[in-house]
Image 1 (cartoon, rainbow, N blue to C red):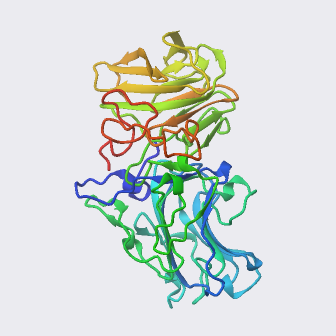
Image 2 (cartoon, rainbow, N blue to C red; image 1 turned 90 degrees about the vertical axis):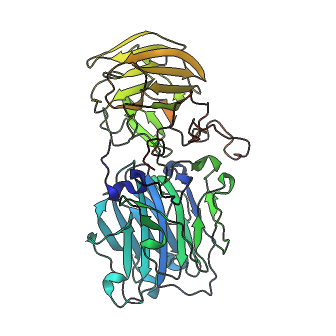
Image 3 (tube, rainbow, N blue to C red; image 1 turned 120 degrees about the vertical axis):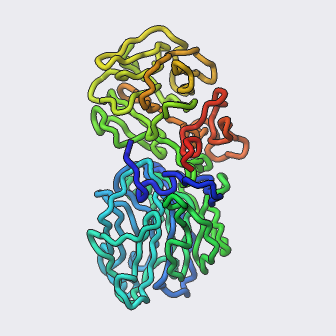
Length: 489
């Protein structure tokens, strides 16, 4: 598990208070291989360039690497402003040299943070404030991360007094999930991960207290923004899955979507953070697992394994589902499988698991003993398009693990007394194998089980706490693995 602190975890670290707080119920998933982005209408060509603007958004990483978050592109001589997470995992802002003062010039780095952003479990709250009318140079651009102003930069912000920027300016459309409304770029030109509660305030420089606050435990949490968004600002909250580009700002300038569909609305949010798969675990090879769909989809090119970002507590009942992409079989202890893996296990071997418990594609159950996997008869075999449910009861004595194939229980597979932290995980062997997992945030399995263009007749089922969305109803008392059920939000 990636260690958390207040700066990294944000509201996902827990509220520690019973005081009612502003809740964000969903986010929008951006998948870079599919070139996901959305863009605004262009403001009137008679509108001037601007010197003041504020952009606020919550993000959660998918692919941990270089990706563009947002940009404003002015078509005349290809002038722009944008920000991204760069190849060094640092936030970076760039603009056309000279801002709107010159018609030509080269792209210029305006600032780069010293802080890195590479935690796939954390929700980060980012606020970008442009205020070039300020006589104090250090105040012309301000960046806030989870409520704290960023003051350490590898490249300090560089904006001239009254320098023009392109956000919300004439003929400059705003793009979320990329920096320019175009296709055909490399994947890193597109955002990979989640965005929630995206605000753009045209013509006003605000601070962090307009969008968030610290709770009694000192954790940064969202706050409802009640101010104006200006003439061409935006508020994208993704509340309606069928119209994810709806602009809830009073100007009503809705965004156009590119390859973003209803199933890209997910329940993972800054106020209820769900487990995903962890792309940072040290596998047999860093290139054998390809993660996508917000780290819920894992495809394999060789023998390797994945695991959840959130560990299973030593108490409680927990459930998740896996959609089978494909299966390949080598031998009983090396095959496509799903189950529990212990905290801190080694990936440097071909075995399905070490001291863990799994359900293999051939219907056998596999138990690792630290040096090899041993298999025995258990349930039905499974193949591509099947859905495997995994239910663990840590309150039982001993703990029990039951697997389901397409909602049919295969019976108790394992009992165990060692309740050391486990993680939900999956394994696949060779090409064309893989899984799409649902920890409760996406019962469509990235659209594999619903019409991608019609969400109106589909509604997943929540757990016993009324949390999450599953394709099949979880067994009685079993819960989604998320901060709300863990008592952290």
